[in-house]
Length: 190
Image (spheres, rainbow, N blue to C red):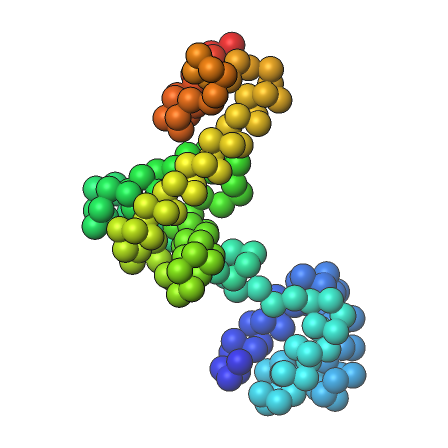
């Protein structure tokens, strides 16, 4: 961090995070730099104070969120090159609403897409919007299978009837999703 004012600001955040009273804070400054005020310090001295605070447990965090990664949310549907990408986004958001995944952001979806495309084709795609038709189809089917599996598990856990055909085989993704949503709606109405 090069900017002196940013260092001073970060040190004051550290003071607050470490819950240092003014006397203890000044003692820390003097122990590190022989100066009792950040205003009298140069950049090297400020960095030294910051290192001492980090040694005492202060952790730097970026403003956006705990991981320091700015979350992006999915654009409106119908904007993608192909319908599969819109469907991928819709299923991802639905899985987040169903609480099967923690993070329904576009950033988290991109991480999933990167893992899936790296595993299957060798070259990872950084954003879902950049997927080829073939990649989008593969990711969509993978996501549908995953979502279907966790919905069936949740339905079994709640002793709900899981839709099957005449031979006892599970119905398609859309039928399972519709049944799961009907069960959720009945819970909300109760």
